[in-house]
Structure formats: structure tokens, C-alpha cells
Length: 262
Length: 308
Image 1: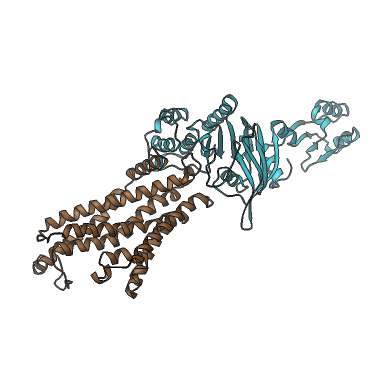
Image 2: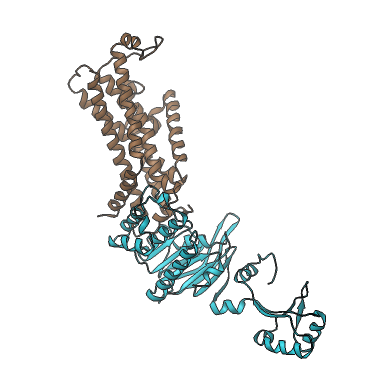
């Protein structure tokens, strides 16, 4: 087995023994459950009011209870929720070595440091993909359970592709978080960084320059600002890829070159 | 054969703080070398530089003949280490923590985990989560991780930390056995001279980043202050007798007479005979050896009480 494969096995063991997978699954599952809840309300707002599910004063936003709307909301939830949760996973996988002072035991081994860093990225990626898949399947189940009307042909294929690309774009923004977790020696700096980027993304997107700000791109792609903004130029995707690569290289260099005092 | 550890002019500063200053030392294969210094003397920084975790500003280090460059692959398959306080993944058991190390050290057989658990007396705790271990057992786990792969060189930072007296004796025996029976080189740091003097073949004393002194057990004996302490009913008259016989003396408050003359120290019975014949028989006559800790503090200039 390769050094990365061995190290990835160890990262999986550490993740399995922690409560993090369950925590991230529970947190992410709020998205389809909340989405399903709103579909129920949208289907019959008067019934929802009578049942006390919403206040009589609630203003129901425009939308219809159907699969395209519901899956569109799921895509946007993946962009926003994924940004937080994937960053949380990366913060834990990288930052815990510093917070738990275990990083020193990984630095002078026959297994090279780069293999350990790459293994961590492999596990973060696998974790995020598994989480997104499970949430998507749960979303389909919730959608069926609330009795959404049959969707036009191609709806699910299109929604699946949108969600997959959204998740991939969000995942590409994780390496900078890993870099901040490593250079910031713990969990808090990377989470602070992720939240800051998310807030900045809102502000930059509101100014109309979102397609040039990598952290705004996944949500725009998922249709957060409407279909008109979902079609961005190649430069937007290139910026996301470059940001991811910069984070990856930065993290590798940090583990290789920086003084490790922790 | 190359020394197990060789540093030449190794230097590391953090801003104005000098962590390690022009450190050159040689640790021969199969010896136990103790690196002694107060907290903040530069011991851990040196060990981290030897392990490629910190870049020196100047100088270089060689470990098992290989030049250490931070982030590059060193001779780590043959090196076991424990740096500062031992930490482990708290959610994993003792056995799983060792399994993690084993898998990151390819070529180490699976049975090595059970062997080291037995050897370090961790059997009772093998399936307990590391986060619940006492400090002493966490230290044992740290040592187990360092020893798992039967390394040729051990770098141990304060290995006796947190151990009870029985544990300290046990680890001392273990390290002595590894060095003297299996030829393992042991480089250990400590701030307790009394502890390291019992096992070290050589001792390097570091203070404010500089290597002050390197000495073996015999050298340590030579360097420690000794004195002949004498009490008599009439200290003044006793001083006159001793001075008349050519012994330089010093009178301390309380009437204690101190003689540091080598002849008096090797033949205190002659001094006793002299005083008895002069009619000033001593009420106490005792050769006192400077305590190890006092020697160490005197050497680093940190002894608040002055000479022993």
C-alpha cells in the first residue's frame, strides 16, 4: 500500500472513533429536513397556518412546492452549508493535530509529511462526498415523503449535476481552510476564516462582483442570486481551482518547511 | 563510524531570544548522553532541530550520518523520539495509538504493538482510551511509541516526567539495558542532574542555548566541590592549629570550619590526629560533597545560596 493509502487509513480510523462524522451528518441533514418543511408549507399555506406550523403573520416567499424548487434549494444549501461543514471537517482533520499536540508525532517518520497531508485531503474529500451523497439521498426521500408532484423528465439528472458541481466547487475551497488550520495551530482560526469568507462572499455578491470572488462562486452557481447569475465565465471556475491549488500547495509547504513548535 | 549525533555550530534565535547558540556536540553510538539544562535552556529546541522540525539559522546537524534538512526525509526509520509532554489521540485506545505509529512506520511487524505494551507495563490499559490515562501512563505510552520499532537512536525529552519513583527506576533500567546490551544510542534531556547522573555515560550541560560543559561520570566527581567540615569547642584556636600546619581554612558563621585543601580531603584522619595532638579534638569532622543539584546551579550561575 502506498504511503498516502496507509496514512489515509489512519485518518479514517481517527475520524471513525470521533463523534465528528455523526455530528456533520446531523448538521447537514437539517438542509433536506428544512427544505421538506418549507415544501409542506408552500403546498398549502392555509393548512400550515391552521396547524400552527407557521405564524398567522408569516410572509410566505414566492415559490412552489415542486421538485425543481426543492432540489434548487438543496443545491443552494450545499453551497452555503457545505462551505461551513466542509470547512469544519478540514478544520478538525488538520487543526486537531495542533490542538491535541499530536502533530509532532507525525513529523519525523518514514512516512513523508506530504503523504500525511495528502491523506488528510483524501479523507476530507471522501467525507464531504459521502456526506453530500447521503444528504442528497435523504433529500430525495424527504421530497417523496412530503408528496411533491411528479417532476418533468430530466429534472433529477439536471439537479444531480448541479448539486455535484456545487459540492465540487465548495470542496475546492477547502484547502485554504486546511492551510489556516495548520498555520493557525487549531480549530478556531480556520473556522473564523471560513465564516469571514462566507460573509465577504455575501457582500461581494451583493456588489455584483461575486463571480470574481471564489467563495461566492458555488452559491452563485447553485442559483442563490437567481438563474441569471448562475452562468459564469470560465474565469470564475479558474479562480476557484487556483484558490484550491494555492491552499493545497500552501498546506504542503507549511508542513514541510515551517518551524514546527507545537 | 560516524557519531550517532553530530552538531556543528547549531544556532537558533527567535527574534532577540537566543534558543540555541553555536552548539557543537558529538554523541557516540551506543552511549547514553544526557543533555542537562534548566527550563528554557534550549534542550527541546535542539531536539526539534535534530528531528528536522525546526530550521537552524546557522550550523548543521547530522543524525546517524545523515544531514538533517527540515521537511526532508531523515533516517527516521531508525530513530525513536519523545518531544516534550507526550500526547496521544484521546479518542483512540492505547493499542490503537500504537497501531497508528506502527502503520506510519512501514516494515514494523504487527506483533510489535503487543510486545511494547507488555514491555512498558501498559497491558492493563491497552484497551483504554488514551484520553483517560494518568500522566504516568501517558508518559509510558509516549515512550512505547518511541520504542515500538526497536530504533538505533532514541531522542527523549524529559523521559521521566510524570513517572512515579518505581517507574523512574524501571525506565532507567530499560534505557541502560538498551544502550549497554543492544547498542542503542540514547540522547535524553533533563533538568535533574541527580537523575541523569545515574544512567548517563556523558553529560552535556546547556545554559541559555550554549553548551557550558561536557563531562563523564568521573569528570562530574572531579568538578563537584568537596570540603572538610570541622566543628570544635574552640574554633579560633583550632583555626590557628590548622593554619600552622599549612591548611588554608575558612570560618563560617556558627563556628563551622571549612578546609578545601586536597591533602585534607584525601587524608582527613591526619587532620583529626593533628587537632587531637594539639588538644583541640574535633567534635565533628566530615568530608562533604557538593550535591549534584548545587553543582549544576553553581555551574549555570543560578545558585541563590552560593557554594556548598
